[in-house]
Length: 82
Ligand SMILES: [Zn+2]
Image (cartoon, rainbow, N blue to C red; front, side, top):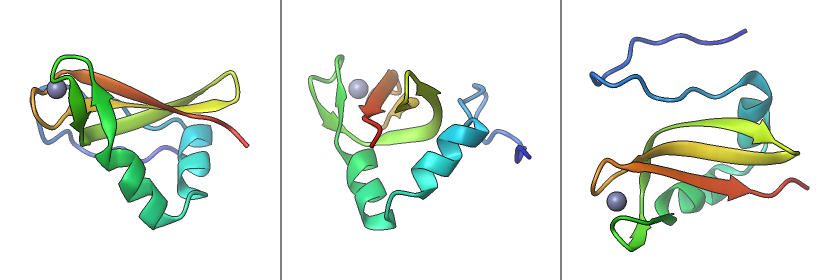
C-alpha cells in the first residue's frame, strides 16, 4: 500500500518506500523531529531542516532524502539500522 498525494510543489518530491516508512515510523516522533531538523547541507554548510522528505532502505540503513529548507537543494541523511 502506497499513499499517493498530489505534490504541493512543482517539483516531484521523493516518497517513502513501504519498508522505509515502516522503519521511519518505528522511530519515536520526538527523535524524528530532531533527525529532520539537523541535516547537514553541503551548500549552506550548516545544519538545516529537511523538507519534502522521502526515504529508502539502502543496505539495511534508512536513507532520508529531501530538500534543504534554506537553499532548496537536495539533501540526504543516513539513519543507521539497528
Ligand atoms: Zn542548503
